[in-house]
Length: 88
Image (cartoon, rainbow, N blue to C red):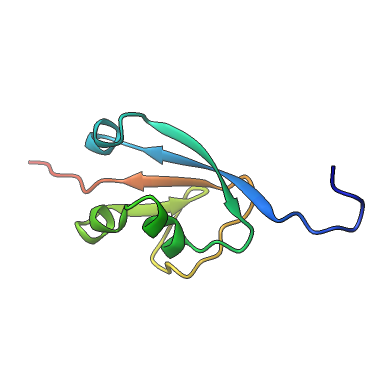
């Protein structure tokens, strides 16, 4: 139990995968606990997701596409991995 005034040292986030990424990950949604102060780059490294981002996958946090991987994740954030789309 956290006493009033103590800092919470962990956050919980939700990762969402779309299209072929969901197949690659084996699921569409994952909830994970991270240390408070974790950046997007640290998340990518921890879950070995850097390659998919380097191959054109976009990242949206709470519905906003980001390109700053130094962004610090907040508790209850929703991180969506959006694969590149092809069409014709």
